[in-house]
Amino acid sequence: MRFSKLYAPTTKNAPKDATLPSHQFLLRAGFVTQSGSGLYSFLPLGKIVLDKIRRIVKEEMDASGAQEIEMGVVVSADLWKQSGRYDVFGKELLRFKDRKNNEFVLGPTHEEVVVDIVKNIITSYKQLPLHLYQITTKFRDEARPRFGLLRGREFIMKDGYSFHDSEASLKEEFQVMEETYTKIFKRLGLDFRAVDADSGAIGGSGSKEFMVLAENGEDDIVVCDGCQYAANIEAATRAKKTTDIEAPVANFAKFYTPTPVKDSIKHIAEFFKVDEFYTIKSVIKKAIYKDEEKIISFFIRGNDTLQETKALNACGALELLDASEEEVIEAGFHPGFCGPVGLDEDLEFYIDKELREEKNLICGANEDQYHFVGVSMFNFKENRYKDLVQVSAGDICPHCGGKLHITKGIEVGHIFQLGQKYAAAMDAKFLDKNGKSMPFYMGCYGIGVSRLVAVMIEASHDEKGCIWNQQTAPYLLDIIVSNIKDEEQFAFATQLYETLKEKKYNVLLDDRKERFGFKMGDFELIGFPYALIVGKGLAHKEVELINRKTLEKESISIDTIVSVLEERLS
Image (cartoon, rainbow, N blue to C red; front, side, top):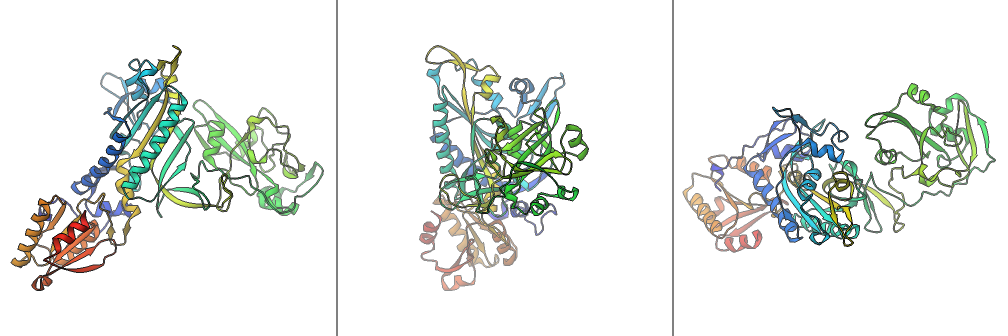
């Protein structure tokens, strides 16, 4: 491609709301243009990158045995009502009606559609397993679209769905997809981790996220320094927390604590002269369900933090909000003096599992200005105990005993073991080996294809602009004519460009009538892997090759330039 013919409108300044490098550079370098809040169009450079990523994803998915299909973006609301997600998915699901008053949604995910596709067609275990996937446009009505392609409303996604006759078969495909995704992200040249994750609104019994490590990552990832364990902060676990600090041994008793003590767990620990490890903290939330609201207390150690996604999973709510003191009191709790011991059984509360059978603790006595000392955590029903705490840096790995650390990552893929959730809800069944009718076991597997365009930049950029690797670069080489009016320079650059084109290399000839500095600025902003400068050195039979990643310059003889470029660009 000749740069004079390329539609790549570059600018010096990014929009004020563009805070991340990927958002800024994709707009400034002419990869995308914004058409509305969270809505972007891919321009020629961006489309080339998008197609390269799409091709790698497709090649590896096809190699895994999955079969590509295409499902519609507009989905009948009846299918979502069958699965039960129509009312509970939230405002991110865009609902609308046609002229005949029929209800539809714009699909953010396609579990319901694919179940309907195989329902009554796949009827026997002999036809299983089956894996169908697509690469298509999705829509999620984000409340606050931001970060460009990383958090838009419309996006391109690879979503696959597998059907199985047993949980064992599902787990086998889950492993195949973990290996397939690993191949995809390695081919893209990304530094990533497969981490244990929360299944969220998709549901299911187990899931893993693929996280690209990046300074501007939106997610906290817990990693171990002694083994391969890694998990999203929402799903991370640890070995049970312990301490060498001596326990405050005391007989069980109710102890008067003046009003100021209720201000914080720190004050309680100071008042009793104990470490916060030996206190129990109550975090009271308002849980929002489909048809009701509840006030719920979550009990954790005083030196721990409640992990709200774990708390959501514990109580099964759609959302957790802060509860006002009036709401807490009306529900029957005592703010500032709430504890699990002696609490009314009709009230809803959960206890972190690490507190099970612990002794010598201090907690609220459910009475104003009183706490219990010498508390032992026995005699609570098993269903009260849940994993509630957020893992912190320095905690101990549950697998090897190493130390856990927190780093930042950007989610690029997610794989789920759905089990029979959707098939059972939508009455999609098959006959097993014994002739018994049963719902399919399902898995689902997603990759954010358009999101990866932005992730490539977040993973590789500098203050000047993008730094594309050869796997995803729109063009591998930018041939820059220093002085377009110099006939010798222009003729050599054009001949080299044609030679490389014939050899099937994807290169760009910057033949624009612009200043050399302007052309170099575009090269650095757009981020092609290499630039070849045809300038004054041509008089001495030399040209200059610049590596965009390092910005190192190298003089090369024109007699060997073709062979050198073949070596670098291959």
